[in-house]
Image 1 (cartoon, rainbow, N blue to C red):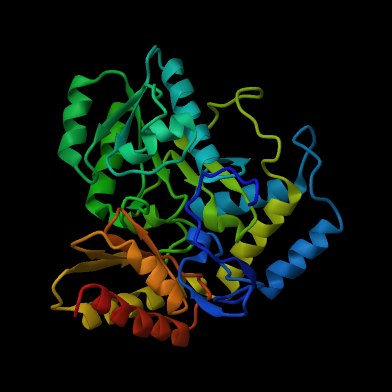
Image 2: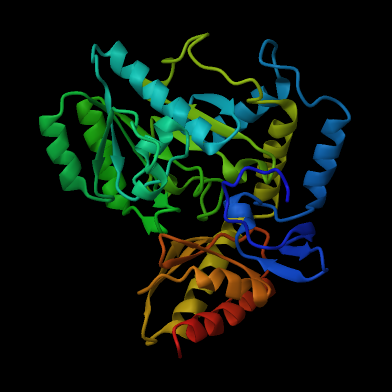
Length: 390
């Protein structure tokens, strides 16, 4: 037995290589990848431009540390700022690290406002990470259990519920920020209404709070825009990124604008590996390919095609609740726990995922073809029907 710590319920297969939206296991079996490493492999597998860029960078420089300037990090920060209209970027290695940076920034911002016990509003069913602070911000008791005492300073409200936030605004003078996902991934592909986000932005402006969006799973073109909050036409004070930013190379980012810009000073936060040349080249190449190949428009079109095909194929079936999502971030909700569909998908050569117990989650690479999208629908509909006893 391998000496890996027993922290994952791993499925009994290992992949040897991939090509585009296909992965291949040790027996040579091919799988259509509709999960993209949980929204990570934006450009699929073995993308020629990414391979070339990373191979070239490995031959030059992978790490030098933030004791010195890193030109690749500077270039990536400028690129992200241009795409997001944000002012500053801090680089780290993962989504939870990006959210840790956001939480620390909010607390420091609160202290600078004279608030001794700053509090952050978070949402039910949210997922922000597994470090102690991000775990405490997460709205899932299953992942929190056993790690008490949790970090204080978080106030939880129902997702997409403006009235609950308005009530908090009146009675809790310690609130300094709101942290939420425009689309909850782990929570079951729950989408915040555009009017909710716009009104929340207004509340934050009125109360001098930081408006912080976790775009770790829904960002980087997946919903048909660079960032999911842009569909509402708003600008956050803080935004966190990771997953799809490096197309498989670990990288996270915490961006700040407006009243959040300039809060951190030298020595306030740091990361040994954050912003290393290799990760930044991966991210720059990912952004280049998304733009050059029109992958955001593709995500929007393919997402609509997949959702429409699934809705049509499952309509009227007992046990099917709905298909929802935005771009290539799709959830199929059933009326019962359906984790068994993951192994059934493997047998059929489909890589899918189940989250929130009852939601089949699809997060395909943005390079998925029309034929592969049709293949996904054609393979998944009968699997779900069979599972539901139809």
